Length: 357
Image (cartoon, rainbow, N blue to C red; front, side, top):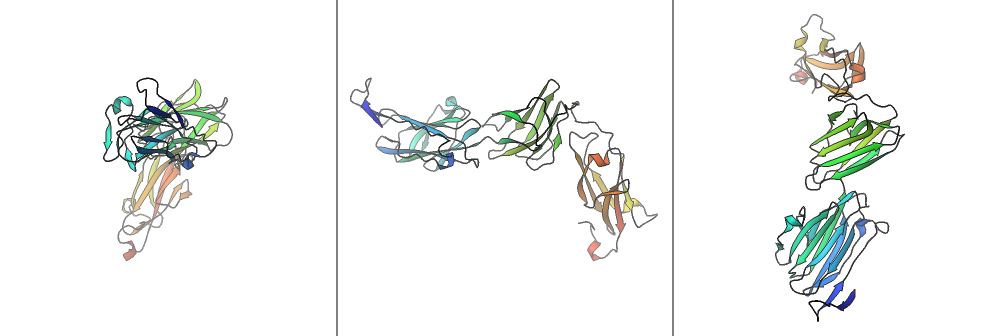
């Protein structure tokens, strides 16, 4: 603490100036704890830093400055996270408070009954200011930080890359620009544990399930970088983007991805019922498109009617799968006749509804 006289406006008043700068290189943010930083209007004000991030490198810096001790004085507490992280939560005496988009949205003080009046707002992407006023009880303010929700890993081995993100903490929208090293290109992308999708279009949607409402990308013939747009990532969302790089420049197609000759047909065959109408065996469904839409497989499903049982999927006599619901690789079925094979079974009590369920 530095104690001195306040020269202008408060000739007899005394003030305190206090700043805490905590380096993430010393201790991970999850273990930082700063306490008893000031006294406002006769009450103890404490501030601390916590981390919700499993990466433990949020590196939150807490700095506070205390102005003349008057009953109406404001106290500012500033929380700043490292680039790539953001202040995700502020609590005052255990109550989570709303972090406003800017000071303009926090024009009026809010009140926590029997504690204090406060403002809480962002000044930068990774910085939040808490202003306390009219404190009527010992008060503890805790700021938590977590990583921005999208991380990128190279799952293809060779080649390096850089990426930048622009994450809107209020909407959850994120723009991620991924730039491979010179001579490398993005071959495919898999979000979380989804199956990889080829990057072979000027612009397309990523048809994969994740913590975002929708994910799209844009590519160009004039650069090896790819821009990804994540819409409305959930508040607690975390998405891992696994990429594979290649040294072969992709031939980009118009929206829709790589064109293929398509699936000739999907037919039903009864392996032990010559002359029986195949429509009696059950039904099959292919959920796909006339092109790959940059995916590498297409889902098929089969349901057997009473008295029949699903056997397998075949192409040119080759068995591809015995599962009644399966993703079949485009490399195996492109331009081919996919056959769903069924067999007649004893219509016993075990088979009186659906024989493949």
